Length: 212
Image (tube, rainbow, N blue to C red; front, side, top):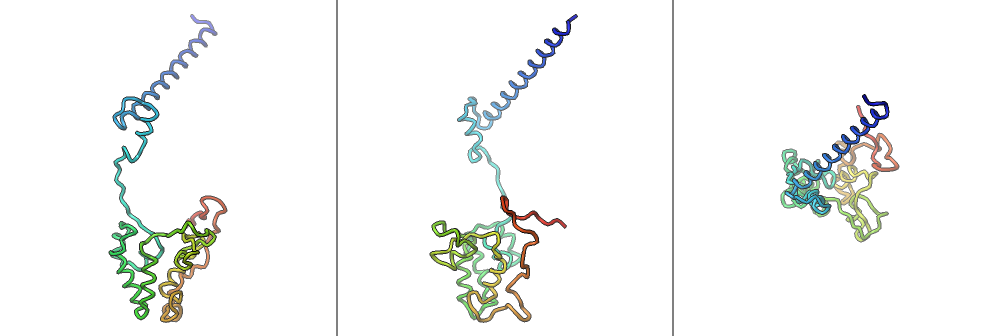
């Protein structure tokens, strides 16, 4: 029969042995994982780093289901039946979808071909442009085109890009004639004047979503 001290010692030894066994098993599993990833047998830091290189070992194929560069290009100027194809396209698919956007704009501004030509030049390729050599204080959607040589581009959270886009297509931004900002066709605004919630002062800056 063991006395109390001997019993404590025995329990302590069993616990220590179990802990060592778990640690060794975990180490072996980790080494095995790193080795198996590239068929390596030496679990060195270099081989583990190589095994963790996604491009080297990850054969995952991703499916693009959404594409959005400049606002309103796909939502307004691309035919609804072509939205899925556009969402799976690339920014430089100008030859495929550019004519469709120009046709839409010309349908409203048929006597102002310069409007469609100007918009086509800045909306395609469909990506947000940033002129990093310019002053970031002049950031904002399309400022790289509206303020050539000065505008930084990009897009600020507070930019009302929907109204700006609608104003460019239907309003007097590029041509004062033949606009659709009043009367039966008030197309120059989405009539949303402000956010429901204020932007945050720190990351992620966007306000929490409104759940209904």
